[in-house]
Amino acid sequence: MARKTTIRNNDDGPDDRDETRFTEEADRRRAAEGVEAQERYDDELRPSRLEDVVGQRAVVERLRILLQATKKRNEPLGHLLFDGPPGLGKTTLASVIPKELGTELQITSGPSLSAPKDLLPYLTNASRGSVLFIDEIHRMPPTVEEFIYPAMEDFRVDITLGDGLNARTINMQLQPFTLIGATTRSGMLTAPLRDRFVNREHLDFYSLDDLADIITRNARKLRTEISPDAAMEIARRSRGTPRKANNWLRWTRDYADARADGRITNEVADAALRMKSVDDVGLEEQDRRYLETIISVFTGGPAGVQAIAHTMNIPADTLEDEVEPFLLREGFVQRTPRGRMITVKALQHLGRSLPAGRLTDSGLASSSESTPKTTKNQKELF
Ligand SMILES: Nc1ncnc2c1ncn2[C@@H]1O[C@H](COP(=O)(O)OP(=O)(O)OP(=O)(O)O)[C@@H](O)[C@H]1O
Ligand SMILES: [Mg+2]
Image 1 (tube, rainbow, N blue to C red):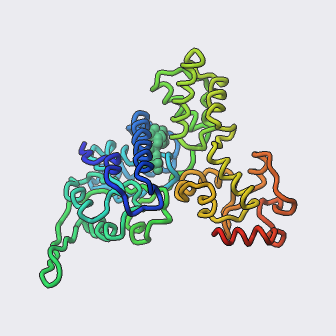
Image 2 (cartoon, rainbow, N blue to C red):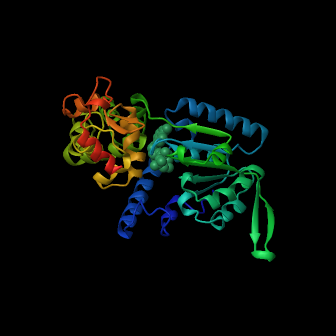
Image 3 (cartoon, helix red, strand yellow):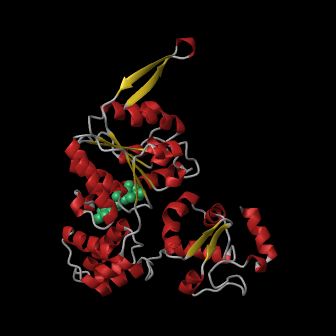
């Protein structure tokens, strides 16, 4: 398999196009190390065949049809886009597909493609029917995006040599290949790029049964004994996300080895996760801080995500990618045109309350009753 560039390599060079994310070099390096460690973890437990992929049944079923048709006709698979929150299996599915087709896979990511010349080697190296996987495709700069259009549509690249009067454009024919894109923000993709993906699949959070199944299978891979109720307990606290489930499985396994007899029982799982401050619905320190910020600083909202991020001193991207999707899905927070709002469910879960009249039963603020002073302060922060 031609894995010339892995996602890991993409963290080598400074990424000065996204200054908001990590301004400090040390922060960047620490973050890169964190990503690298997570990827190593992910790779160990990543399913390698479609039959080992748990859940996402409708998506998997459609992929099976695409793969069968592709093999039957001996044609390259149409370009494919996966979108959904982090840790739900985009990279997993993208790496399973070339294995099922018996073709090569090249991997790169949007932030590492700063100019068309960075993308060119991948395109020219792509063999017939092979897969080029671009992770975080929404972070590709516009020049690269325009360069990729003819490659996706006509398997051709237009290269301009020289400039001014001497400029010449050379058309270079490519082998028909499949582009698989992954994004946590499909909303940030331009319409022309999105439209060039003939197949688009959205990955959603997993059911408890599917997560418990993943945990049980992976415990077997890690040669650890786990009781069914412990698998369910970890599933309940994994925010519908297989990556979280795997990380908690590893942690409870360490805890079981250090504090018990190595078997993960319900009590062991509960004690281990309590030690990590994971509550009974899977909320962690950062989730609670987010909710507490909306409650205490913005008196329940509405509050813009930038304002919340500034107050919490973390990048707004992190909130939007990692914190909000699950809280929104579970109804702990609502997104309104005026900003994020806390819900009754969140207040009940945290055992908190707001000043009388701030919330209606549905969880939406009754705008006429919001205190004028707070509203003014909030406006200043947006
Ligand atoms: N359907 C699944 N069945 C079994 N395990 C899964 C499944 N989906 C994901 N996993 C596990 O979760 C881990 C994380 O998944 P993956 O790396 O594919 O997420 P991702 O969507 O690419 O996340 P990111 O947006 O952060 O790149 C994988 O290593 C794998 O072990
Ligand atoms: Mg990924």
